[in-house]
Image (tube, rainbow, N blue to C red):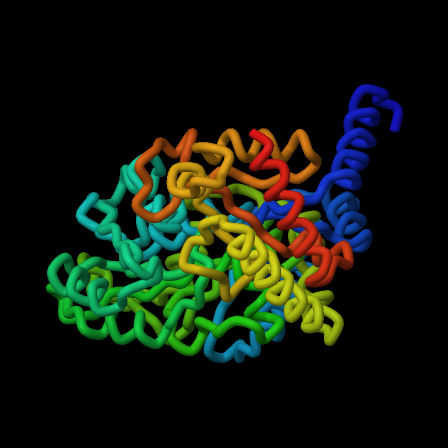
Amino acid sequence: MKDIQISKLIKAEKERQKKVINLIASENVVSKDVLEALGSEFTNKYAEGYPGKRYYGGQTYTDKIEILAQERALKLFGLSKDKWHVNVQPLSGSPANLAVYVGLLPSDGTGKIMGMSLSHGGHLTHGHKVSATGKFWKQIPYGVDPKTEVINYDEIKKLAIVEKPNIIVCGFTAYPRTVDFKKFKEIAYSVVLADGTHPILMCDMSHFAGLVAGKQYPSPFEYADVVTTTVHKTLRGPRSALIFVRKDKVVKDKKTGKEQSFADLIDKAVFPGLQGGPHMNQIAAVAVALKEADTSAFKKYAVQVKKNASALAKELARLGWYVVSAGTDSHLVLVDVWMFGVKNEKGAGAITGSEASDLLEKAGIIVNKNTIPGETRSAFDPSGIRLGSAAETTRGKKEKDFVLIAQKIDKVLRSK
């Protein structure tokens, strides 16, 4: 590379990643093939529109790339192209979720999004007030049981019946336990809206999509109407997103009375509603990652991801740390470090999530500060840290390695 400054920064970042233990639950390590596709000549091509319906010429190979990515996405999750449609153009997870709402919710501000509150494990784009999703629509937040720190489906059902949301979002960013998608579907069907329909059930499986692909986490596709996911977490792909939608789901236009499919409405929301030309180099890299995930090697990887997260959670708990919900069913572990310092007489004193993150980074362990259920502190300086096993599992680590990582975390944080 002729640009010496950028070249140095790329090399420095490459070295930084090699030297640290990466426990960021939203990150992974992609293959050389994914990087090659991401940096390919498809970067040069503008491809506004969809396959066969572009606004620019020269689309012979872009169409093939996009169709291939769609086919691979459906195949990976065992979906029939007759029953499911997938949009592979969203630039990332937040734009993907916004596109679903723009396409399917009322545009007059009366729509309601029922999603998990941020401090209990939900995502900003599940209707939080600081997100565009909370500014354009009203969030009906739900949380976990304060005693068990897991979802109480009966309480969510009661709330849904009273509030009558237009869409119910399940799937989270900091909830370590298994989600019962069947119960969420039952909740959606227990609510009857003013027009006689039921709330749309949307699953955001961004964090656990790779575990679903690897058969290590329940699949939402049997029950959800719409499924969104990023590609760069447990799916081990580039920063991008996918929107899956049932082809048989339709809505009547209030003005014309004509039926419009969810798929068409969401496609129009992505383009031209929210985006211009798709990033074809990104879509090429997505296609590569999806093929890699559809292998026996990836399934073994998914098994190890869960084993490693479990080993990490168990060892931290053994060492006296407060593991939220007392464990994990996924790649994700949430730890209340503030509780440890306040309640544990043998601890090193109260410590915040921000302090813990900074201390660990100095020791070569990268985590992120995170809110916890019943949070009493600010999101900028919360009570917890979030840990993930995906990246270090990609690097070949096993359960014994994660036990040692837990012990190192314990040593660093007790030294405060």
